[in-house]
Image (cartoon, rainbow, N blue to C red; front, side, top):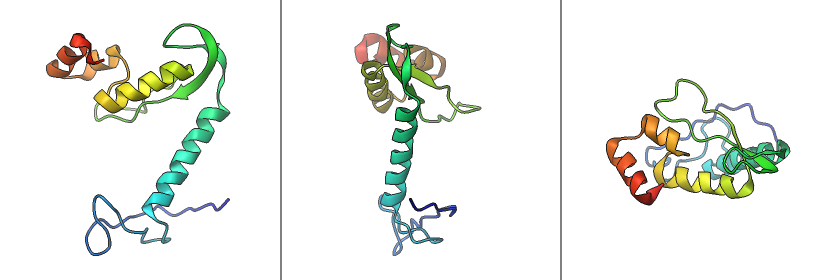
Length: 125
């Protein structure tokens, strides 16, 4: 496994790259896609390596649970908490986060707009 200590800097100004398709790292030449693939691989290794049998925070059943941590949001003063969820609830949390930006109702209630809260109450979340 190749280990890189580069602080990756990807150009986004033409002709070297764009916002949609950043160019290769100016420090080490690694492509944007390769760096994203490596980050995904590391995230999956962490999720699978820390899986254990415990109570799911979503459904309350004792099952194999996996680490879930939502993306950092502007209102977060520190790293978002880790939640331990079973496969089903992990998938639901990821879908909700991708669709709304929020993992659960408490997160939405604390940080969402009135429109987002109203949409969730109507059944979107």
